[in-house]
Amino acid sequence: MTKDNTIKYKTESQKPMYIGEVTPEQIELWKANHLRGIFQVIDDNEKHIGYFRNPFRGDVNAALAKADAKEPLATVRVFAELLWLGGSDVFVTDTPEWLGMTSEIRAKMNGVKARLVNL
Image 1: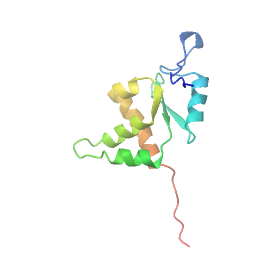
Image 2: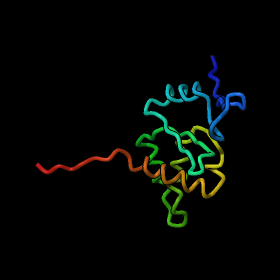
Image 3: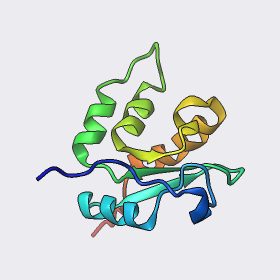
């Protein structure tokens, strides 16, 4: 039995709100396949949407391994590529949109905040 890995994007008849928007069924499929959850990034012009899965420690390690003084954003680029599920290609092709997406991706790299309490 083969699994259909084709991303199901909304069609014009389904009236997508954003470029790259997927069907609710596609979102549910991603959620089922990525138990840590998924998230979406919407550009500030509210035209484009991209979908990502939540990271594992290995994803952060793989991204940090690409740290390079000659390419300071390599870590974020690799992290975004690892987490990318689908959506509008503008997040990987257009510099302003990519920069907006990376600010959200960096927040995911920081992970859950913790608090130190002295006892």
